[in-house]
Image 1 (cartoon, rainbow, N blue to C red):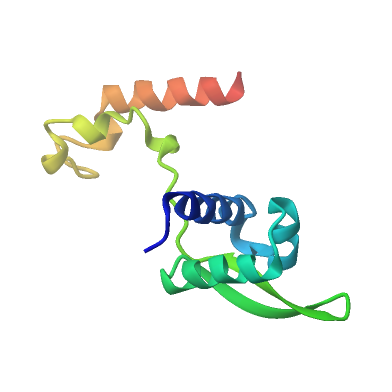
Image 2: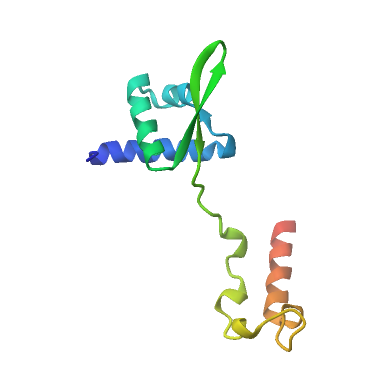
Length: 122
């Protein structure tokens, strides 16, 4: 079982990989950023791969073989729907386009959309 410090390092590595987006990061670049040996870095990458959090893709970079570490599990960003009135609306189960209760007629939804539009503009 990994120690707490090792788990912290694994978590840091994963966050850095996620921070690079869908393309991921070269393994060698990541080890340099974290001042890790190739051996220690490879062990961490293997653990993340076993947990199915990343994929290691072999690539030729500057005449040398290395791996690109690509995130497989990307956390969902829910910030775009924060405060959405539909999430706590008591009529949500009966709301449907064209119905007597509908998104087209919903005043709280209209206010929320306009408020978020103004924030985005501002």
